[in-house]
Figure: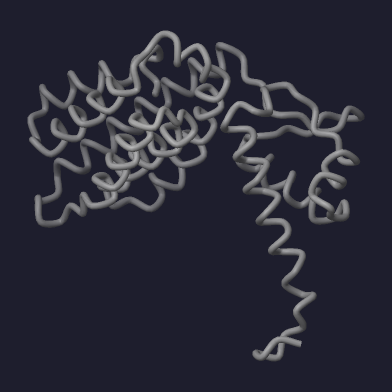
Length: 220
């Protein structure tokens, strides 16, 4: 019995679900689990030393996030998006970010809390220095969420967040290719230029940086 009067076993399943959800999410977004790879319940319950109930709840939450998908009579697998899916996701991201920036321009400088953006930039720099692609991917997501959050629209952030998480699957699937074809340091510079443009409130400069930043080949 806990000191607050609640039986400890009531909270254990939730903590297990959160642990498994976080672990599987990390494995997927790091590229360790590839798109289309099956997630076998028996193997996962053995790996995590848990029963099927918390595992299935974790898989349900991951499905809500778009990271796994349940297939009739074939179990669960890491979500596999087509090239068309990703093209559409990039297009929607572009529309939402441009709308967010238009709202930001209506706010005064004193109303903007840029600390989360600066923290995300710090994460991007550290990841680039350490060569940690997963950390860079997570910092990238944090940066864009913070950028959209400047618009001060809860519904916009709620719409945008699952979208950017799905796009992390694109990053995960291309981590090795990106390591060979792009520089993490250039990713840091591009994000800094975008941040500087947004804070400058220069519409032409913002538009140019969003156009360049939104290019699919530069998604990191």
